[in-house]
Every structure is written in C-alpha cells, then in structure tokens.
Image (cartoon, rainbow, N blue to C red; front, side, top):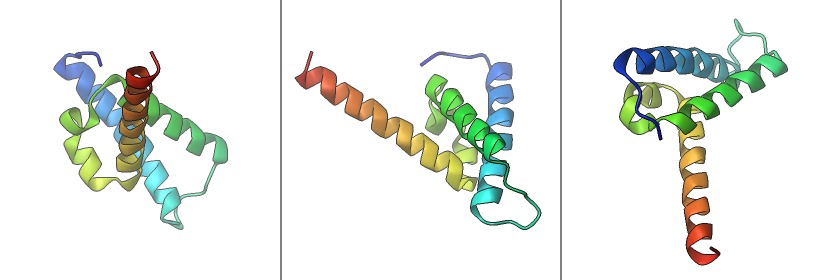
Amino acid sequence: MSNFDKLTLQALEATAAASATYLDACDSGAGNSRLDPEYYRACGDLLIRIFSLVDPERDFPDLLKRSPAAREIADSIELRRRIEAGKLRYHP
C-alpha cells in the first residue's frame, strides 16, 4: 500500500465517497437514482482501485461507517489479500 499526502487522501476519499453514494442509492432502490449499469460498474471498479491503493479502515473510517457498498468492497479486498497471502505461504 502506498503512503499518500493528506491532500491526495482527501481527494481519493471524496472520489470514493461519490462512487459509494451512487452504489448505495442504486442498491437501496432509491427512486431518485436511475440505474446506469455502465456507471454502476465504473463506480465499483473505481472503489476497488482506490481501496487497493490505501488502507480504507485506516484512511477512510467514516466512509466505511456510513456506506454499505464501501464496506462490502473493503471487506472483499481484505479477503482477497488474505487468500493471496495464504496461497503464497502454502504454494510458493
């Protein structure tokens, strides 16, 4: 994981929050959000990329508290890291 300066982390958090907000609105069936499948996927992909570069629990704890989509993606990335670490340990 990279170490980013405060300004970069703030920009990444704002971008992640915007993506997570759209995902959460679509997932909750909010009537004011129309699902655009391409945009939905792009938002998910963007969150995956951002969360792969940072430690979301350390860097974006408030986002994880308020966004189910952000939590789900962060959990998925952590699970993937554990699986990869386990594979390296047993199958070098």
